[in-house]
Image (tube, rainbow, N blue to C red; front, side, top):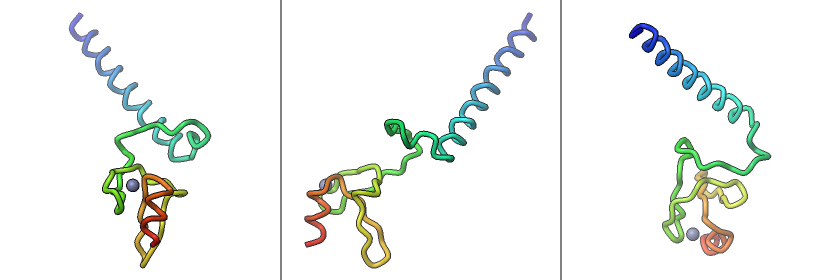
Length: 83
Ligand SMILES: [Zn+2]
C-alpha cells in the first residue's frame, strides 16, 4: 500500500514537471502572445529610471540610448526621460 502511494506521489511530481516544461515551450514559441499577458515570476522586472517603479519590460514603452535599453511604466515617463 505504501509503495502504491509513493508511486502515485512520484507520478504527480513527474506530471507536474512535465506540464511546467510544456508551458515553458508554449510560451517560448510565442503561443501566449495573443492571450492576455500573465504575470509570471520568470518575467524580469526593470526599474523605470524616471519614477523608480518596477515594471515588466514592454517593447512599446522602451527607449534605447547609448546601447542601453530603458523601460518605462508609461508613455509619460518615456517622454519625460527623452527631455
Ligand atoms: Zn514611470
